[in-house]
Length: 321
Image (cartoon, rainbow, N blue to C red):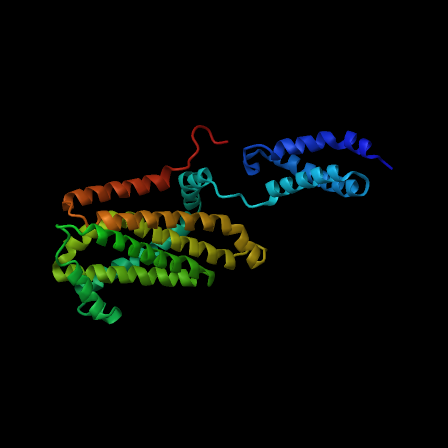
């Protein structure tokens, strides 16, 4: 039967190696594969050592090993704590990469949203009373009245702040429904993408038919690249979730959903940030008294920025590994 001194002499090198690994400032999942495998092997050996030491060693040594085992377990299996650099990495690298990886869902979501939107505009412009058969006439008339005067004189600062808060709640609500209802095997996301696209198209067409198309276009152009894209991204996340529940590839539905969860979370977080940006623009810039040519120029720059971000952000430089 080994004594404590013999156990320490035989095992302390591995204990120190494991302590060195878990004490690094760098997160464990950022290490290379062999280092992670080595840490896992050392942790399994430590678990056996701990059982042995509890029966034969002093409380001080047991407490040390217990603490080391807890730190190693957290490093290997615990959730990573929130850090600003990690959030920044998600926005600058992981989110655009994930969207490109799920480009087919994004394309489908775009079609489900934009085609009904275009149909809604055409119906409202060229089919009498089509919009009023789908949306309440009072709401349509209210929207036309709201855009009848334009925004040449801007809007009060207090009103801007209040409306920015309203836009956050409204836009997040729309995007959340497009995403969360994907749990119904994707059918909920399909419905809300079509529904919201058609509604937005109907309202835009109705206001344009009333003679105020320039006003609503100038108002929407600034925040549209962020807001509409975010809604489509949220819909893509819902479709991805629904797909994982239908196509399980031999897993249980819960296991398939768990496997796709990282991609879904990245898409949802990225869409939420875009909606916050859109709400700020919609609350303060869109209703400002800036000349329409300036607003359209800024809108074009925003569109180029969003497009370039999704196409190029997060790509590896130099040779592929």
